[in-house]
Image (tube, rainbow, N blue to C red; front, top):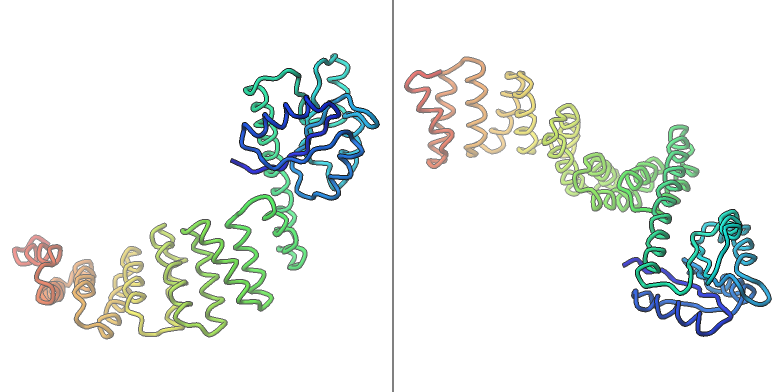
Length: 337
């Protein structure tokens, strides 16, 4: 349950206690109280965590509607949820309360069901407001980012994060921090993005770049490899190829990269380029049966069946339980291809 701090304002002790009891029944336990609008206004300024006001309409010194108007006129509290409680109301008062900006009106005596519905309507309004406000800040941030006004963009992205955790926002924060040379902070932001969305390839790539700038080659390679895997799974071969070539700049003898590039080129029908990558992988790891299997597949596509047969035979020799290699080798021997 969302934990909201309430301020209950009522000059009648029994009426005030009824509201407190209802909130407690619904597991809302952080509650401040006041006897009138003046007291409540003071509490608002002392207690910065109030998330909702439930105020009686009729009170001495400052009544509920007057208090509501003061709250709505304040920049600090203008968006605070505010319910008015009354035991009788006219159509004119409903209009007056609406124009003053009430979140809702609670009629006494209320049932727990109706009381809870009112609070749920507040939550929905808070959610809709948060979505609207966060979108406004996000759009402003993107404009600043496009214009390379990084500090202003960063400020707007941070405002978005006040409303919601968002992987795209953390990615953009990481991008800005990288542009500013703050690579440690960039890594923190990129990691947050991947924690929210573990298939966010751009964030892994950004993290890899930041690690590379810091000279942390192992972590850079791991992050970039993760990005490449995601791109390949999503059939985004051009992006995967770019990232894999970045890894080769860090470690020129990475078998997985050669193999992955070979897979990409083979899918694209670039069999000779694929073969070059598989052969590079084989030089690093000559006893890996899967590499020989991939080499054999390339030769089949290139119609060089003698060399294909030789590659599959070597794969089976290295791994006698390699069923796929055995089946293709058998097909070659009986002339299926």
